Length: 322
Image 1: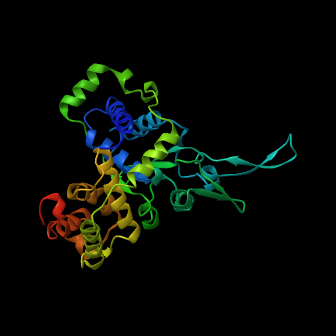
Image 2: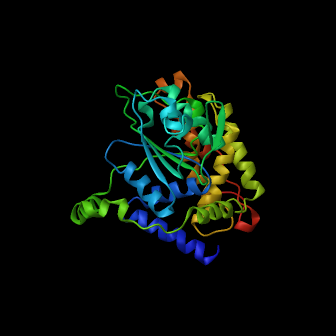
Image 3: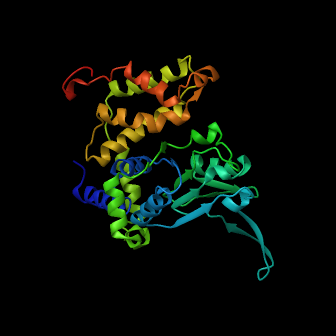
């Protein structure tokens, strides 16, 4: 087991977020796994299910600075990364920080802004820095981007380019609440749904230590080979125009390590890989047109590949395959 204090803090964070987003323990755990792995998260779902609520709650319990960017069709890259402005008192140009300069950033309705502005996030997501007026500035550490988008292809939205989708470690959907959870939400009133009432559990420096600990979780070589095999199968699939990238393979392993860390284990088990495969890989796959016409989906193609490739069971785990 991991040090008791770290596990207690992590479980307390999960409990506090679950206290405002009722009945979504699995999604909350997945988001924490992605963030512990150093990744970013895309929350794709219909309006009103709690996407923004979830991000605000996570920002509160982790501590640090939180900023929200409401993306619109007229937003420019400088509105996101910042830029040089004239300071009348000093008589010179000074850099004005953009909203990306925070520990936890909510990119709300990211698909409502044009591709040029979306591309301003690419450097921030990969390099943890922003470039403006010829100068590169590092982002705060830790830096976590959680974006939301409506899956409905309505007017005024722009599809995210493949290069940007590949930089999201996970794409997740919250879904509608179960009837009993919706009744509890109505009975408790709106006051319960205020993330601002949550108290921080840790400071950002402690979160950085947790991220480093998650990266030390052991992964058996057989499981590494299995991950490479699955990703290779997506690249060779006749139904896919674009398979998973090497970045996807690395993200999948890191997400599995973080999932084990959340569960309090120092080693990855096959279920960690199986449970993180779809949220990490599916959004990076691009269907061929003929597969799309047949009603197929990237998630279904990935499911078929996983089903036809049994997970190796290291000898220490009690078997060979399952």
